[in-house]
Image (cartoon, rainbow, N blue to C red):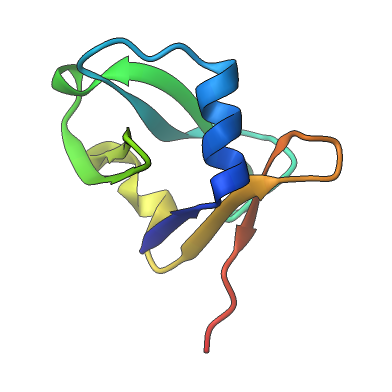
Length: 99
């Protein structure tokens, strides 16, 4: 499992979301949604304090820490996701192609 966040997406997160000290970008699983890595569920994001979660995966890019809770790893396991912007300037998800 890996999350790759493009530079355009990082800039979008910085411009659109407010991060205080000790806060990070949390990716989680929600019911429904357009992009469905596993049927019936899609990824979503929010800003939260790291200390409020049982972190299962954590990384950082351009001074923005991001993580996935342990309870949500089942959704992201076995997949590499790319988080980017679509042509409308909105966040989009896609599965990274295997080599």
